[in-house]
Image (cartoon, rainbow, N blue to C red):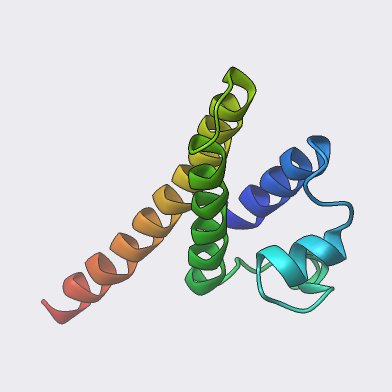
Length: 108
């Protein structure tokens, strides 16, 4: 799920002109190498929770930047960034709870 989430967020940010390429998204928004998403797809893996946390943090940074400016377009942009960050946070919460619940079941 999370790999698809990264692709979705990339497409949305690309669509509004915030990022131009996957390489830019991977390095500047995820803090990873230029081929990070390509590697995830090739290896059929999920991004780390760390990557999702970094992305969420950056999205929330821009949410605050736009929210502090006047104008309906800025407020709409802030809400858009907040919604994307919330999707990251929801995925982090879901994946994190799966880890501890599975460990708790195994310990019983």
